[in-house]
Length: 384
Length: 224
Ligand SMILES: Nc1ncnc2c1ncn2[C@@H]1O[C@H](COP(=O)(O)OP(=O)(O)OP(=O)(O)O)[C@@H](O)[C@H]1O
Ligand SMILES: [Mg+2]
Image 1 (spheres, rainbow over the protein chains, first blue to last red):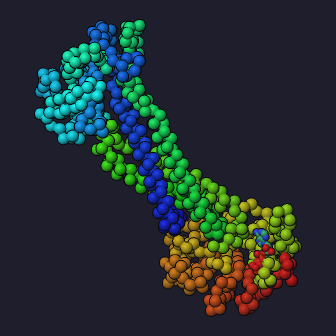
Image 2: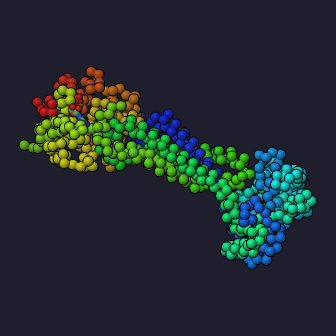
Image 3: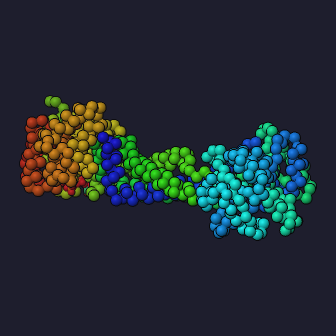
C-alpha cells in the first residue's frame, strides 16, 4: 500500500516526471558512453600477454632500432624467441580510412604473437610472396576485401604507391583480440628501401621478445637495455602491457578529461533530481503535515519521499542503460578499427544502478529534513 | 464524579514573531465529558483552531496541562505524541486533506497502516467506515471524482476508521454549500448519538452549532 502510494506519487505530475526521467536517461547514456569509450581504450592493455616484452628506442616510439639487435637480444638469458616489426603508416584511398598497418618479420612474428589465428596454407602464402598481406576479419569486412584481391596503399612514412596481395584473413583467438590490423611483410619495405633510400634499410620499429619465464620480466628487460647502453641507439624494454599503456598515456589527458566529464554529468543528473524533488516536496507540504497529524513519523516520510526519488532516478537510469545498449550496438561496427572491444562493461551497469540509488538518497535528503522538521500546524496552514 | 475525558487546565499558548510574544490563548480551563458534542465558536483569530490543535496533540501549549483519556499530553515528546494521536485522535479539516492519488478506500485505509492489522481486517474496517458515512458505493472513486460533501464524508470515514477516543473537526462545513453542510452535520450528530463519539467541532455557522450539545465561545484567547 505505501509502495503503491510512492509509485503513484512519482507519476503524479506526468509531464514533469517524464521530462525528469528523459533528462536523466540521456545523461546516463552519455555517462555510460564515455565510460564505454574509456574502457575500450584500456581493453587493448588488458589483452596484453604477460610473457612478452617490447623493446623500442629509448628516445621515442617514432625512432627506429637497427636490425642487427635481433641476434644480440636472442643471446640474452631468459629469452625464448625474438621477432620484429615496423609501422607502415600508409593511406588506403583516403586519409580518413585509418587502420593499423604492421610490417612484420615473416614466419617468426606469428609464433611470438599466436593470438592471431592463421592457417598453415595462409602462412605459406605469406612467407612466399613479398607483397603478401594478411588482414583482420573486421578490416576485410570494412573494405570488402577478399583473398586474391590486389590492394594499393600510398606510403606516408615510406613514400610511393605500394601494391599488396591479400593472401589471408585472420581471426582473433578470442573477443579481446583486435581483428582490424593489417600485417604485411617487413622485407617488402626493406627491399624497397635498399633500392631507393639505402640509408633507411635495416630499420626496425620495435622488437617483440618472448620470455621463457614471465616472472623474470624485470631482470630480462634490464639485461636487454644494459646490453645497448651507451650505443648509438639505446633501448627501452618493457612488458607489453606497459608498452600498450604508453599509447594510452599519449591520450591520457583526453581520458582524464572524459572521465571528469562523465562525473560532471552525474553532477548534472543530481541537480536535475534535486530540483524536481524540491518542487514536489514544496507542493506536498500540507499532505506531509496531514500524514504527520495522523501519527506518521519522520521515518515514514523519509521512506515516502526518498522512495519517490529513487523510483524516478532508477527509471531514468534503466532507460538510460537501454538507450546506451542501443547506441553502443550502432557505434560498434563503425568503431571496430579503433576499439576491438567496444561493449558496456558490467561495472558500468552496476555503477549506474548504484548511483541511481545514491542520487535518489541525496536528492531527497533536503526535502526529507524539511518535512521532518516542519511543525504540523505550520504545514497545515499552507493551502494549495 | 468520574474524571472528564478531556481536562484543560490553565492552558496558554503564545506565538513568537521575531522576539515579540503574541499571546493567543490565556489561561484556559474547562472539561469535556465523554460522549460530549461540543461546538467551539468565536470571532476569527480568537484562537479556536489553536485550542483544537492543542487538544489533538498536533501542537503543544506554552503553559498548563492537557489531560486526555488519563494522559497528560502537554508533557509528551513528539514521538510519543505521534503514537498517541494515531491511537486516540481522528481529525477532520475544512479542506478535507485527502491524498489525490489514492481512492476513497485507500485514503480511509491510510491511518490503519500504523496498526498491526491484516489486509482483510483493514478491508473490513474501511468498508464499515465508508458505509457509515454513506459512501459504500464510492470506494474506488478518486477525490476528484467526488463532490465536496462526499470528500468531507471520506475524510470523516478516515477520522473514525481507527475508532478514536476523540473526533476533532475544524470548520468541517466551512467549504460546503448549505445542503452538503446539513448532511455533514447530520452525520456528525449520528456519530455522536449512535456511536457515542466524543466530538469537538470548531465552527462559524450557528446552524451547525445547533446540532451540538453545548457551545463554548472563545474571545481574544479567553473563554467567554
Ligand atoms: N503558527 C502561527 N504563527 C504565528 N501566529 C499564529 C500561528 N497560528 C495562529 N497564529 C495566530 O494566532 C491567532 C489565533 O489563530 P487561530 O487560527 O487559532 O484563530 P481561529 O479562531 O481559528 O480563527 P479563524 O476563525 O479565522 O480560523 C491569530 O491571530 C493567528 O494569526
Ligand atoms: Mg481556525
